[in-house]
Image (tube, rainbow, N blue to C red):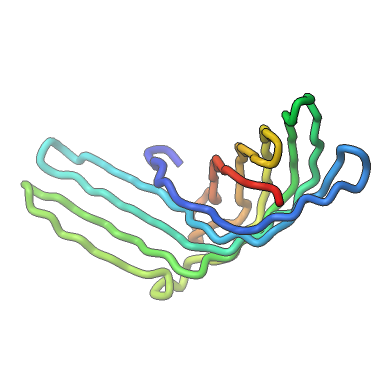
Length: 165
């Protein structure tokens, strides 16, 4: 949504690529990671509010892809599919600064009745392989409303470094 900024997170886990026809493969895995946002509004030169939200989740991707061999251990791949995720825990922190004095409120999602922990959506990615090392760029777009009555789902851009065993 307008005004919301990036809040960098992490993503670790194991994934499986299984080739089923020449260079065509399917991918799945179990990932643990975080996502969130930062929102800052300057009301005037002496007053501002800053909100930070970070959710920690499990995620299961399921994609189909194509790997194009460039030779000498180099390859490019592209994939498309979906994902399912569930948030295990999350923190919400709102700081209001008025005339240099700060007031901070912290909450956990266990305190929210209107927060939807589960999400599913579209996953699109491209990657560069150098032998067994993979640099992957992916975009995820969740379809679920994260908070009841608030339009928009999770939107994440991932930069990942991996190693194939």
